[in-house]
Image (tube, rainbow, N blue to C red; front, side, top):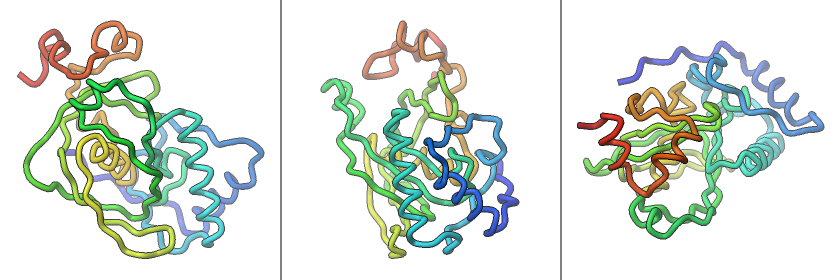
Length: 218
């Protein structure tokens, strides 16, 4: 169980100023890295702190940052904004064997506000994952294989949707960001690997080889 994250100290006015500064910049904002306090705070529920037009622009900027990184998800706190907004999209070509084992299928672009997830069933899956806010590292995380996501759309409508496999992993990872939780909080720390070491030793569809050699999940 992870520790409870403190609420963001930002006021609605400060959140608005933060968003407006990013929207007025001439370049894309950087992705903040682990150690920045915003990544360890409970982000504020979206409640009209910015206008519908600003929200639309923010989502567009987040999508561009995600694509440029590249990644399959990005949460507003990763841009230094303590607001419960995240974007998800997975359209990358993946080795068919890896895709089958990981239950990975394309995920169309989705923007979510104020999300919460709950497991559907008790099945879990363990795979390596990384994070744009912990550059250069990967670790194995055991996550729910299927989840029910409850969220608001950018238009303000309540919605819910089930996800499974790799899509469920993305949903859990990004929703966790909005509550001050990083994937390393849930990871098997003996599996923690730099990208170069991962590529040299553990870049295979499953985790069996790494599990045996690094001594995690006995």
